[in-house]
Image (tube, rainbow, N blue to C red):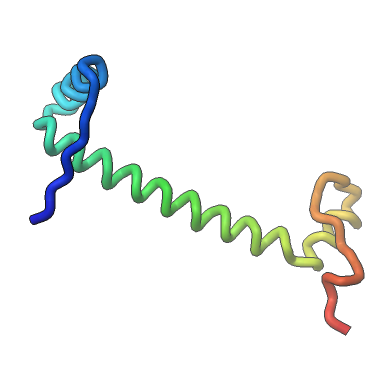
Length: 83
């Protein structure tokens, strides 16, 4: 199994140990779980941002927002529609 050595200063290491104790976990288990959680969080943020961009790039949505009188949505342009 691969390993990763990461240096922490004394304060960082003590904060990690305390957080692990609070969770009832070993330091190693806490760091692994935290890393998995951080990776999952980043992936979810990227997926959400992609979905957001897809939804708000829809010219029909822009027209519906404009028709509703909401002025902070996407602005439809002539280049958004195919001829």
